[in-house]
Amino acid sequence: MPVIEDFNLSNKTRYVLWKITENYEKLLSGIELDLSSDKLLFKKKSEIHKKQFLAVKNILKYLSISEQKLNYDESGRVFLKSGRKISITHSGYYAGVILSDNEVGIDLEIMNDKILKIKNKFLETELNYPLKLNTEIALVYWNIKESIFKAIDKQGIDFKKNMLVTPLDMKKNITKSWYLDNDQIYSFDTHFKISKKYTLAYVIKNQ
Image 1 (cartoon, rainbow, N blue to C red):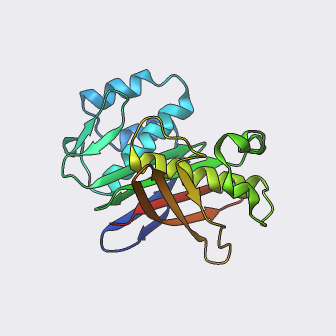
Image 2: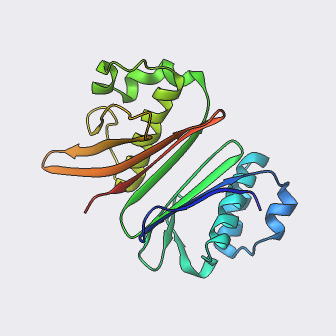
């Protein structure tokens, strides 16, 4: 089973990362899809997107979350009927899921130098930090802000104006982040990882 990370971050939060090494048939054979999931799978055009979808389903099975415990919105975003919070990410041959009693978000991105070309679209204050903004650092900032976006689940969020990330602690792989909008200010426990092939971050909203 290609679970490469499985952490109980606390008694309320658990995170699982899966490396996709199986072919399509193998991923499909290990799970049962209901009609809603079957339709979502059918809409996926490329093989890698189908594999990512099925890898997430395998993670949910690994976490003992059956199809009967899930709901979907019109965009295909998944929710837990129990009310627990869930966030999903996938990129390339990796997929991840985080579960918590609090609002959470997770994002993984395969290494890509193109992120530096769009840094001004999602970074503002962070551009003034002394730490050199290379590909890995820029991707981590994107991971964190995308994770906040998933945790907040609100349209019209400006990644530059509504989100702030403090300088990264490269020794502990942690930092602090906030969502700010008029009189709404939310803080998040923020963790990140830099691998040779990907960067990843997840955020947990403070109560």
